[in-house]
Length: 359
Image (tube, rainbow, N blue to C red; front, side):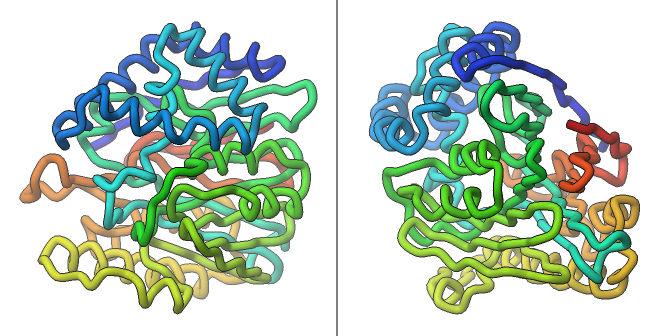
């Protein structure tokens, strides 16, 4: 299965101007994404009114956290002619209880003696439900700014950033972890967008720590030399520094978080936990085996790996599972912050070539 429905789009100007242009030019893709999520919510028993009432509670936290992001998001909603709460719904996927026990994405990072040139390489698979992939497109978005760094990010239409790189040589990748607690606060995807507005690693870490977080996540943040990993819940956070290589999947590595993970009881839950453990161990082995020679080219092979197929690093749908449970690697990318380059594959990377983009 080769799925590659990525739109490539560049905007520039002040935040409100960028948002307006984004909304106007991609209004149909944004409306498709909103329509899908409303249908998805309704399938889960949440009406349009209930969705908007819930989302409205998050809006003051977004405005307090980053007025700049809020102006850009308001511009997108205006340009696309959509309800602002509906637009924010796209950035709230990680905070919904319906996505508990997520099993999405494998992240890695390497630097120092582990890489061929001594500088950071960071990357990941983006694993997603097949149903989502078939109903709305991806977006590789370049946002040029007069004041902030330029950004290239992976997102869904209507979203600012799900991961990416900026012109100050900062990169962020991440993955889902069990939702130990969810509260009203700043959505994960907007924390990621705010990270990419920063010019230094110190400031990038600071905007994560200051956020009144709504949910749980694992972030890998780097500049051209250093790697930090942040495992977080809505109430707590663990920050770790790595000087060689590191990887993460969908279970907690921090002991105080890991002991809070719900026990896997059903066959489906046990399969998800096993997949996460095996992908993490497999990626760790690949990094160990290639330490000292890790490059963007070798990293592509990491993300194409099929050990424990179909629940491998490069994920493929299981034909015997329920349609709504089928996962695949929707996209994959590798980032070299020092050269401000990203290699992007739209679809399972075993079937779709990586293409290089540079800020």
